[in-house]
Structure formats: C-alpha cells, structure tokens
Amino acid sequence: GNFIVVFNGEIYNYLELKSELRLKYFFRTQSDTEVLLNAYLEWGEDCLDKLNGMFSFAIWNKNNQTLFAARDRFGVKPFYYFIDSKNFYFASEINTIFEAGVSKLPNNEVWLNFFSDGSYGLPNETFWKDIKQLEAGHFLTIKTNHLQIKKWYHFEERIEKLQNHFE
Image 1 (tube, one colour):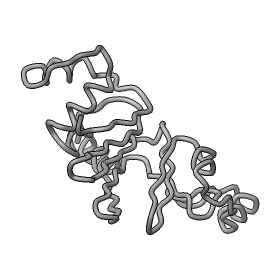
Image 2 (cartoon, helix red, strand yellow):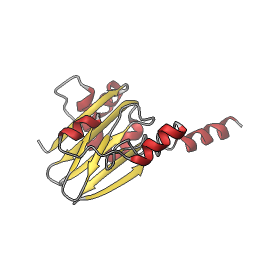
Image 3 (cartoon, one colour):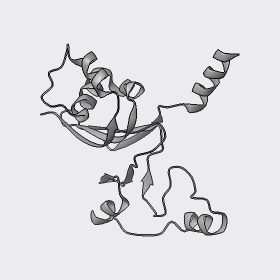
Image 4 (cartoon, one colour):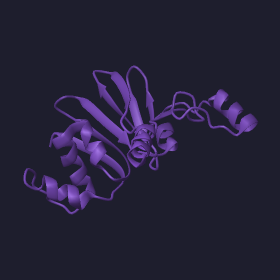
C-alpha cells in the first residue's frame, strides 16, 4: 500500500531473484514486477546491479514522498521526463508527456545537429525543449522537489576489469 510501481520491460533473472527474496517477502503473483519492487525494498538502488534485463521503471514511496526511477544498462527501454517547479512527468513515449500539457517546443540545437551532422545530441537530450531522457545506466531520485541523477552502470570500468582479468 505504500509503494506504486510503473514498469516497462522485462527482468530476465526474476525467478532467481524471487528465490533469493522468498525467505523475506511473500509473493502474490508470478510477475517480474513484484520481484522488482521487493528487490528495491531489500537492496535499494543496489538492486540495479542484480537486475538482468531491459527496463525502465519508477517507484513512488507515498510515505516518504520520494521517487526512484532507473533505466537499464544500455537504454533499451526509454524513460523521458519533464520537470519544472511544480510538476514531474515521465513516460516511455514523448507524446504522453505532451498529453499532460507540456508545450511541444522544438529543441532547435538538437534538430540542427541532426540535420547537419546526423547527431542526436547529448544522451539526455531529445528533439523537444524541456523534455529530457534519463540516460542508459542511470537512475534518478526526487525528494522535496530536488532531482538528483546518478550513473549506476559503468560499462568502461567493467571492460577494463575484464581486460585486466585476462592479461
């Protein structure tokens, strides 16, 4: 009753995680969404390192008035958002954010880079002004209108560790 989950994706190893969590949590369904929530309750942001899959999700804690949201390692599942002093909207499709009343203003710099160089801009940018995307391998938290974004998956470091392991 305290948590609300919005989840887009699939957790491939949810059965293994469920077995690990079964001693502490009661499961009512066979879904990976329930496993995801309990993994977050058990390990907090560290649950991300345990999740194998493609996902973007958000978990709202009603009691603490905090939001935790994350995107998979390689950004297979999208996570777009808009934030101002009063609102935070997120969705897996930008049109949903427009439906919430956010103005459809072009991000001229991104459009220019796209047409002149074929570049989409920075990993957190979109073609629309004030609509951002959470970068692959990142998570965000919101508490008392303060947005914090942090990288959780460090691909470069993992490759370096593998290289060192085989040398």
